[in-house]
Length: 340
Image (tube, rainbow, N blue to C red; front, side, top):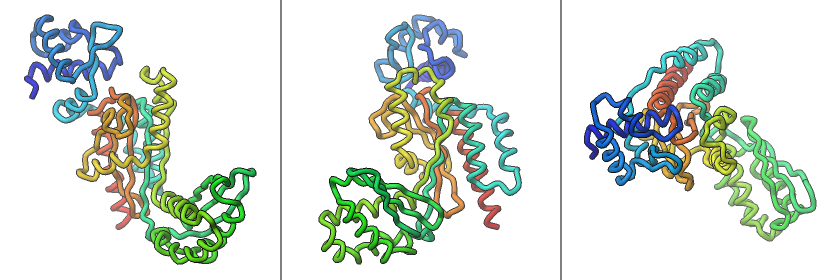
């Protein structure tokens, strides 16, 4: 456990770095500390914090920057609620608009959050499959090597699956799709995996790699019926100096595209009503440059949604966590009123 003085120094470094994105030197720490401490003591304590893994030495400066471990300690032990009343007032007006759906509210709220925080906002929904049906399956030939299989669901969702014709012929795809349309149309998505076993004997006789085709179709349906995500604010996110590097831009774009619906985050946020935080490698994708803060909310389809902000590790964790938890509560209140 860190001493009070060490905690104070760590807090000053993190909060100053969050604001400036610049390494924090001993002189600046001394100016910001609420207690009187000599420069030598600050240097010694900073060296200790670095040895313990809470800080990292900047390559181009005598100052230090927080590490993932330092951010985690700050979030768990030092973070205090920040003043966010102005932002809450703007979002409150969105909730007051009569006739607005939760989706419309989230879309407008996402833009405000991204502009205010300079982070990307991701809304990911995990709807229940109990009432969603398979409406139609279609095939479109793209070239001699590729084709697209299109799945249309009763809720209007459409999933496109590109199939490589090196693995399965166009004729085999047509046979498979005809079977799906003949035997599985108007089946619940939640029952597709079980019901599809009934067509295996016929499929096996006519399709060489029938297991591959069947599993590809089933996985596409389970995915499209269960999760949807929408990202906003990428232009604000890329204003952060951390993402001047093209490689880091590529990494964070890949994370946003592939991490949805944020399995790690959802498992954390299910444990309480508070916003959950994943810092650096805690996101589970081998990227130590980013952080995710988010919360769950109920959806109109009876499932759960995730509202998350993604950005550099110097996210204003206190402000963002407070806001997201408050938004989650507002959505739940609106949802409950709608149910009444």
